[in-house]
Each structure stands twice: as C-alpha cells, then as structure tokens.
Length: 326
Length: 303
Image (cartoon, rainbow over all chains, first blue to last red):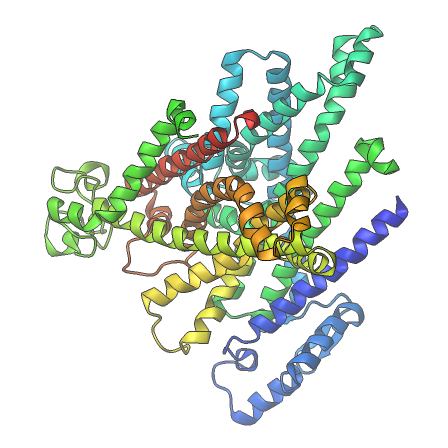
C-alpha cells in the first residue's frame, strides 16, 4: 500500500512538472511585458531595464523556468519588490505580492463551494439511487433517468442565473451568494453558499442517482450478497454492508472526476454567482496578463485533478480488498 | 440497424429535433429574409418607442410583439429571433469542425497506441494522462490570447474567422485524449482476437489489418463518441463565449447572448430565457440521439 501511494505520488509530481513546463513556455510567448507591468505606467528605460533584471527576465527562458521551479522549494528574492518565502509560486506584478498568499486567501471559498455542493449531491444522489434500486418500480426508475438526462443538459450560467432571478431577486427566498468564512459564522457561511450548492446539486444529483441505481442492481445479484441473505442476515444489513460497499467503487470514480473538474472549472460557477474564488482570480489574471498568477492557478487546478485521481485509487484499495491483493 | 433505430420512438423524435436545428442553421438567411429582419441592425436605436431611456425594451416580456417574435436585445436593440437563428450557425459550425478534427486525431492516435504497443503505447499513454489532467477550461481561457498572438500582433483587431479557428484549435487540443484512450483499449482487446491473428498469419500488411480488420470493428464506438461529443462542444463553446473569450461582436452567438443575458437579468430575464431554453432542448435532443444510436448499434448494451 505504501509503495503504491509513493509510486502514484511520484507520477503525479512528474505530471505536474510537465504541466508547469507547458504552461510556462506557452504563456511566456505572450507579448505582454511583465517588467512594464511591474514598473508602472510612466517608466523610464533605465528603470524598465532594472525591473527586467530584478524579475530575472533578462535570463534565457529555460533558466527562468529553472529559477521558478527552484523558488518553489527554496523561496526567492525579488530584488526591489520583496521576498517570496519557501513554497514560492511566483510574484504577482499586479498585486505586488507573492501569488501563493492571494491563492491561499481565495482557496477557502472555492473549496467550500465545491465540497459543500458535493456533500449535497452525493447524499441525495446515493440515497435516491438506493431507494430506486430496492424498489425497482417503473415510475421512480423513469423519473431518475429522465431527470438525470435533463440535469446533465442544463448549463450553470443558465439555471444559475434563473435561480438568482426567481429565488433572490424576485422572491428573496435565498440570500445573494457571498462568502463568509466558516470560522466567523457557520450559519452565514452556509446561507451565502446555499444557492450555488442547490444549483450544482440540480445538475449533478441525477447522475449519481442513476449510477448508484444501476450498480446497486448489479450488486444485489452478486454471490456474496446471496450468501449473506442465505445465512439469514437482515435485508437492511445486507444492503448497507455488502451491496453499498460494492456500489461505492463506481461512485468514488465519478466523484473523483467531478471534484477535479469542479475545482478546476469553478470559473463558470464563480462568474455566474459573482463569487471571488480561484476561478475569478485566474480569469482576472488572464485579462491583466498577470502571468505568475495564471501559472499558479493553472497549477493549483491541475494539482486538484491529480490529487483527486490518487485519492480515488487509494480509496479503491480501502473499499475493495481484492484491489489490494492484486 | 436502421430498422432497430426506427422502432425507437425517442430516437426518432430526437433525430427530428436535431435535424430541425441543423435545417434552421443552414436556412438562416432564408428564414431571416422571410421574417424581414437581420441580426445586425440596431432596430431599438433606429426606431423610437422600442427601448426606454435605460435601454430596456418598453413592451412587456423583453419587447415581444408581432414584429419582434422573441423580443429585442437591451441597449443595442437587435432582434432576438434572428440572433438566435444565426447563433445556431456559429455554435454548430465550430462544434462540427472540432468534432471532426478531434475524432480524426483520436482515431489515429488511439489505433497507433493500441496497435504498436510497447514503448510507443507507453509514451502515448503518458501524453494522454497529462492532457487529461490539464484544467482545460482555465487553460483554454489563458491560451486563447497566446494562440491569437501567433497570427496577429496585439494592437491589431482580431478578425472573426481567426477567432473561430482559434476556438476550434484549442477545443481540439484538449478533446482528442478521451477518444484516443477509449479506442486504444478497444484495439488492445481486438488485437488478441483470432481474426486479427489469422490476418497476420496469412501475411496481411499492417495497413490492411488496420483498415480492413480493425477499423470496421471500431466504427460503433467512434460514431457514439462523436454524437455525444458534438453537444458537449456546443456547450463548451457557449461557456467560453459566456466567459468573454469566445466569439466576438457582432457575430451572433448563443454564448455571447448568455453573457449579455446574465448582465441584464434583473431587468430583462427574457433575453436570457430564449437562448437558454434553445440550448437545453438542443443538448437534450443530441444526448438522446447519442443514446439511441448506441442502442441501435449494440442492443446488448441497453441499460
């Protein structure tokens, strides 16, 4: 198990380095001059030259990349701008601050948004899926499949805005989305994120219902479920302890993919609801040609996808003992 | 196969809807001519009495009237109906070209990886893994200016066709990996089957094995994936335009309508509802069609 995790982590680090390299070399082809941004609007040539030197932009691109990677482990001194301590992902010329500080500042919002929504759609999706599988009635089955199709076809910028209009603007049922730190006031935290959670849940729940149902139906015909039944185990325990366990593998797989895309693709959600998370940070970075910030957000999003992939693989082994043996 | 598809009532219904959308896209100029308006004229600004002082339609429900069936756009005062009709063209064309490119690249790479095996397969596998771990939405947003700058310098105005080409390029760049991985898996299992073995023993060239033995067995997954890819690309293009990096003014585009719609939704929700409902119907019809195509090709798969 330990060897497995180590191997996967090393692989993930290599993937992230490749992504970082691709991003670095591609984005530095942009003609925007970071030195000019750092220096300000009115900038005499000698000061511009100075800024370019301070940022290391007078070095060859490859050296710049190595310095950037080195900064992650050692920290880096931007002469005249400030010091960026150990895990240094770069220095934003626009904010005049290390990018990691800004990202860590916005991170709680994006994580609350994603994980909160995941809890909601996971709970409702799996619960209705189990009920649908146990009562393989035609009506519920049809409702589940139809609503999963519709849910998957809805766009967050469409129903999100509709929800904003009808639930917030017209009828004041829910609060205008906003972010209050959980530690400050848990109630306001939940109230501020309720609308995005509900909208994301509408889009995602049905898919989980469908997947849970179809896997559960398969699981209920498995030999070990029949054995448990034959030994006289209560129906409830059979479902909860054996069938559900087998179903979890499918659920964990799609959840891993969804969480990765949700964190990486939070841009659309945040844009729709006007929330200032990582997604907004990245799109602002594009507009203001803030390359270090952009690099860091791409890396954070890619990191989220890669990390969730590893977690999924580890969870496989935890859920299904057979995976551990092979 | 065709018979099986015809018996599937949902499939036929969704096919009709899809064909309707395609016809509307092709016949957009005819429809606009019959209707007597175009998507570019600023009717609201040219004719007094349509927009109020704040730029919002005076008539109820976003200015819907016998003259403007779906209302008029706030501020600019363009006709919503023709914008919607012409918008299908933009989205469908971009999605169609991207689907074809993506599928071709996916087929080639998938078959090469699966058939060649060994080091080639390992290398391609790692590339696919990396592409799939890219945060694609974010990367495309960031990447659009870079690609454009390869063709136009920063101070020049970007021509519309170039923006469309750039969109196709970036969407293709991140689209092929999924199909390639799927086909690689299929080829790996097919390669071990007896008929491939037999072909190899009788001395068939690799080209013959690929084109005459492998490809005919792969058409089903390829067709299914392509039908499901197209609506995904339509929404992806709309999402990019919604975020402000897709199509640019004045080309009619659904994503751009969403962007404007979310800006003015508190005063004019109708401007958002028309493209929204149109997109939902379009995507549902296409997804249903994809499911039906799968069922028709492979009845065993029926869930």
